[in-house]
Image (cartoon, rainbow, N blue to C red):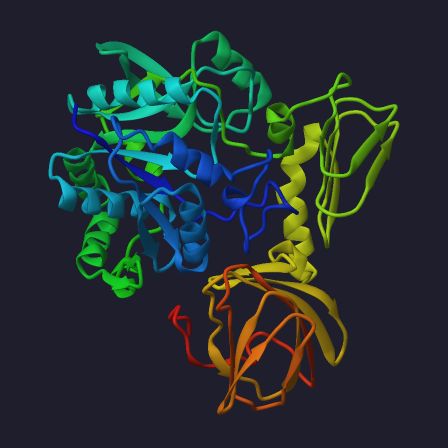
Length: 469
């Protein structure tokens, strides 16, 4: 069998797992169950050399260095493709089709989400192989999941006639139902729509041309005009921006007569909310799942997650208490679907916590905002070995850097200074400066900013090895 080319969709910014998942660091990059992120777990699933070829990861410029870093941690090589803007899943699939066809005109492509969890990896791989064989017969195959209950948060698939090889024709895709209709679907043998698709690149391109030419044609031009940016492939923005924003479900799957379904019974979850996290977590004898410094007294079936301080819960059952550095969520698990509405409410009031973390990832490392006043801000900065900040200056603030671990190489105007642990350097307003970590260990320092304006847009970049603007 020809190797499947796996395509991992990694550009979404979900809010259903707020306050841990936010636009600045969405759920696919977060360790929800200890250890690796869901993105890294998916990449390991697809790292079966006998079945899968070199992966294609489709993301955006904002997340590109996070993708690169997390791939490096797994040791997995992949083509990282940057969408210039969000155009929903149909455009991403169209780009994957064009790129896979360049590699092999007869390629079989598998499209997978970066934020799903699979519990039985071996069975997952076997299901993908089965779906690829059905796809090779001229089908666009979706993997359907046997329901474990009348869930209202998933779309459903009505399987039709047997077409051989373990595949069945898709009679209909059904939108998310209410509880009564979902219960009926279970009795009638419907499957959950996992959103994972396997198909011949040639066939998907033809169906996109037929059913969504206003997606396929602009995206094909965007791929043809793509340029290398460091180790990334950046699609042409002018062409890509002309593509209609629509999901692959609406654009193709609900209209094509080529759709088939293969059953995937491998312990799947889209981790769609805190209730799903509780279900997938290890629990104690009282059904409490505790991550971090959490304690429960006289309570059961709770999810407690603390990223920093102590969280204590007394006399409550079936709640999720999620505490981060700057936000706390308390919600009954059976009402966790309302978290998205709460994030919208917080955003309406202008609170940055709706979408931004206090810890911000950068290609050179990260920084954590510790304290902020009217004319000062304190950050803890971590620079990875070999990391180099941009050569820059500020018009409105001066900075003091105090090294607490490692060694910093600091450029200040025409000077180059080596700053060791427990040493500091002062950067006056307007000074052209840069910091680098020439050492073998992470560089950690405290930055104190003082000035009349402290926004990140008061950074005038003169030179940047990461090509940021």
